[in-house]
Image (cartoon, helix red, strand yellow):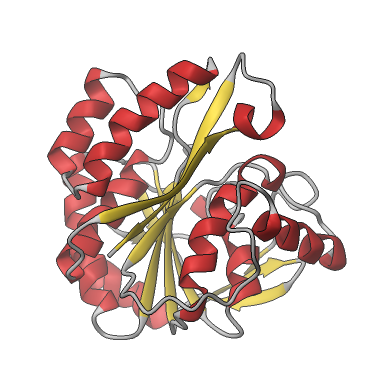
Length: 277
């Protein structure tokens, strides 16, 4: 069984177990976080979430809002989708027969779910190499390890982020999610390297169709306003899957930029935590 070793430990998050544990605690208690540690007491049916994937010092508190909300929901499987920033490997890549290593321990890939996904969705390829360098999925896993005692993952990394891909893959993911207790995590940051006020306006426009689960309008806004959200296909796929599973709306849990967090507002990246109900 192949072990996917950390690519960004010590950079995007602490590389030592105790430091990482403390760092995640700080994210939950941060003023841009939920302000308390998990577990939550929510009774709502949550089908999936959207989380950012920058360094924990920038986006960790925003991501913690989603992870706090779902901490009372104990899934067997977490399906994680994110953009392939390196553009290596396959257009749509899942993984089988693998383990993801973090400073908090190991998480096993659900090989049966991966093989079933590839069987029912012909755009999915099973490829380890596609996952080796990117951070978009990796930074989600320590947060999940913090809130869940035991779970398996189905990591899916995307070069192709088109509307057609999102609808096809979303439908297939929904079929997998119906077979076992599942949480879907779409990993994306929003506007990149723009002034803070402009980033807020751009991202507000893109979040509106997300909350309405309107995929066509989402892609229209993305194109017309040229919103530089890196994981738009991961978000769209998550929307499509959650809608197929019965979600009727999204809820914005927290939005902030790196500038809001650090005070440096001339060139920021936007982050949002969103859940689908």
